Image 1 (cartoon, rainbow, N blue to C red):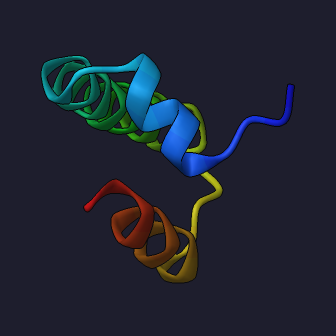
Image 2: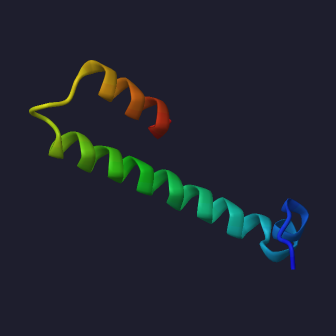
Length: 56
């Protein structure tokens, strides 16, 4: 079975999607924080800007 966007919409309710998006955003922020702390000594302004872009 080919999974298309319409099929996915059928599988998941709006609530499921909202919860998933919220978790995804939380995970992204947590990863960003971990990444910046881990690379605190070697990060550049460019690196911070890239991760700010992905975190928002």
